[in-house]
Image 1 (cartoon, helix red, strand yellow):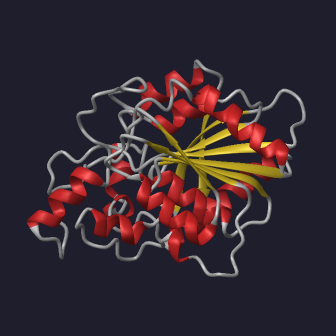
Image 2 (tube, rainbow, N blue to C red; image 1 turned 90 degrees about the vertical axis):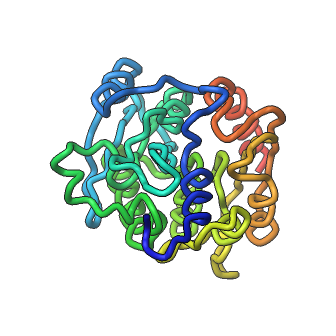
Length: 285
């Protein structure tokens, strides 16, 4: 058990914060290994690479544009594998259902980069040197946000693209929001089922605070966010709409509740249609 967690709080954190181990609605394929995921992505036009930024080596899958593109779309993965018990985090945080990668594949944009989270997609040897705090209480730590900021700048420069669109699923949406707050080149921010008020979210589930992690809801008043759309499942019991609404009252953005959807279902199935709604909203700005 993590230090400082009572059994009840640990159980709630394990059951609520990460993926639900048994979902009633699968939205993408389930994989047995990181290599299977890489093959699946490569068959769909994405090349695998590793981006070294800060102290991290981040797994990435890249769809390079065949023609010059003005905008690069970045997808950031969720928190990863389910907890094997309510009291213990997974040994390997690599997702068995990489929802954000499936969203990236469904995106018709010409230039797309998918970023895994710290310690995901590593070999067994490399994983031994990766601190589990980065998929537990420090998943949104300042050094994590800084590393993603650097990685995104690297990809933007490598692809010679000027502007960004950031999209994050679940905990990846928290990171996308924190990164957006640091940059002036993000045209639109999109989050999906993301607990954007982290402290309130933990309190909602009676879980211990994520010590060492940043909270988008606590961004300073001087931080101005670009046009933002925050999708929430109407049946999501992991990240209820009230949590996202709390963030929106402080930092703006449009919250869209999608009836019938939960934390995993059915974002991938309908992603192309949901993106059309985002694109129309961008055009009106």
